[in-house]
Image (cartoon, rainbow, N blue to C red; front, side, top):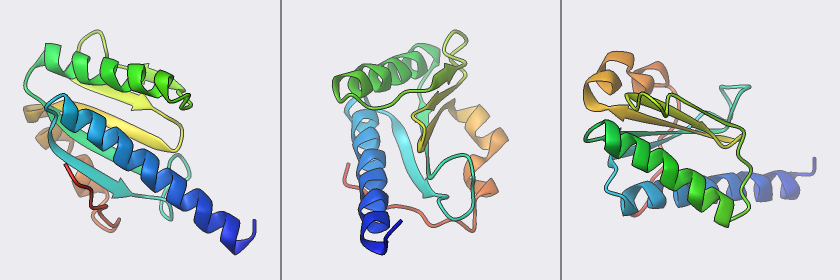
Length: 124
């Protein structure tokens, strides 16, 4: 891939991650974090981590992502954990979203697993 095309693709993924973060913010997702793992992971380019106030809130956040992704014709691969709502994983291919209850977020410490990865700024 040419450098210009690669840069354009990277910007598109970054914009996608920021859009998803904004959707989470719209639904009062808490402590939203975007982690750029593009040079470190073969699975995805961006990881979003967000806290939910409870099971119903986690389910609502995940459902909102799916609804907005459908509206935007954004690729959606799978969702895990929606039924229990304690840790919901939404796979948007190049963006993975982890929706956690606070205590599970601290326990699994996704951010700590990726300490070498840069954090992405976004406007809430």
